[in-house]
Image (tube, rainbow, N blue to C red; front, side, top):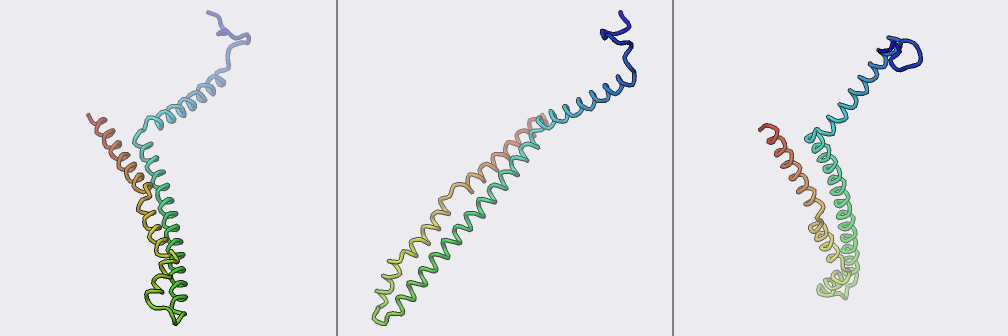
Length: 145
């Protein structure tokens, strides 16, 4: 064997080697931590579940705001139609009811309610949450065996 260990200079500096070993250990530790985080399935499932929860909360809030806006618009139209109907002394109750019906305010209120009921996003979010919880339970059970 040669004294130079393949380098053209003299013997490598011991302090330089120690510093290089220390740096290599730190790099290896970071790599192990990164791999551990990727393999930690329950933590990743929890993280995805939290993201899904936040997304659903945002969508529910937006849907609530839309319903509120639609209800306000519908109630304004109903008030306007009722005021217009009662302002006219010639109108009979049947004619006033017809004017309210013609204003389409009630129809819009019903449409807004139906839209909220038909919106599949909250239901899909609940199903995704249940699936995530079942997945976590199965993974934890599998590790215990």
